[in-house]
Image (tube, rainbow, N blue to C red):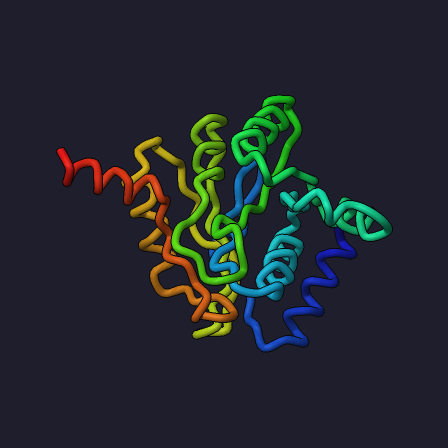
Length: 199
C-alpha cells in the first residue's frame, strides 16, 4: 500500500488535478461512488483518490476484460469480473461477497457508461440497503480541477430521499467531459412519477 500511495502522490503532483481530502477517515467496508463517469480518466482519478487515502479499492468490470494477460492486471488493481447481461445477479453476487465477512471498499460507477446516458443504475443503492454499507461520494470535477471523497451517507431505503441527498452533492460536479454527464436519477424515480400522474 505505501507504493500505491506514493504513485498517487506523484500522479497528483504531476497533473493539473488537486486532491481534496474531504473525508480522510474512510475506513471499513463501504461503497464508494465514482461519478461523474465520463471518460477513462475518471477511472484513473478514482484509483489515485483511493490509493491516496490508503484504500485498496475493488471494482466491477466486464468479465471479458479479465481474459488474457490483461486479466492479471485487472485483478491486481482490485477488479471483480462480472457478467453484465444479468444485472440482478451482479447485485446478489456482491451482497454474498460482503456477507462472507470480507472487508471491501467497492468503487461503483453508477452511470454505467462513459457516454451520455439518461439514468443512473440502481445496483449500488440496492447493495447498500441490503447490507447496511455506507456510501461515500467520490468525484472528479473539471470545473475546479479537483477530485476527492465527499461525504459518507447512510441509505435510508427511501429512494427519493437518498437520491435527493446524492443529487445535491453532485449538482456542481462536472467530470472530465461535462457534456457526457448523466443526472443522478434512477429510472424507477421517473416511473414512480408517471404512475402517480396516471393514478
